[in-house]
Picture 1: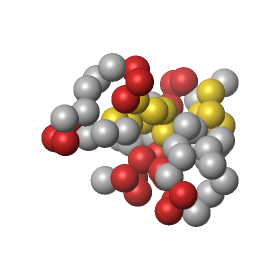
Picture 2 (picture 1 turned 90 degrees about the vertical axis):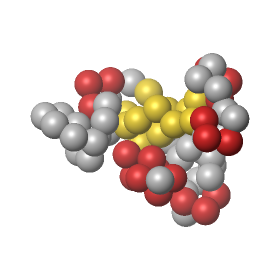
Picture 3 (picture 1 turned 180 degrees about the horizontal axis):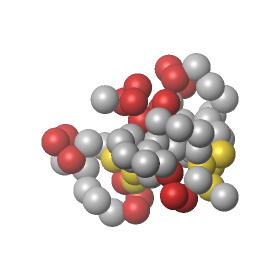
Picture 4 (picture 1 turned 45 degrees about the vertical axis):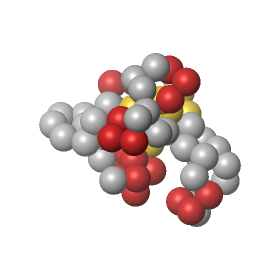
Length: 71
């Protein structure tokens, strides 16, 4: 079991968020998608459009509610 790594204080949660995630619940669409319990998505800390990379040090696993707040 994994936990949400979101550390954005403006999301109104403890830092880090820590919501429990389910491996099979990645993404927001389709059967078992991210909008349900344990849903998650990979998040670029620095967006690619701002020069961020796809390397692990620029990625965080976030619960679907946190991901949807980041845009």
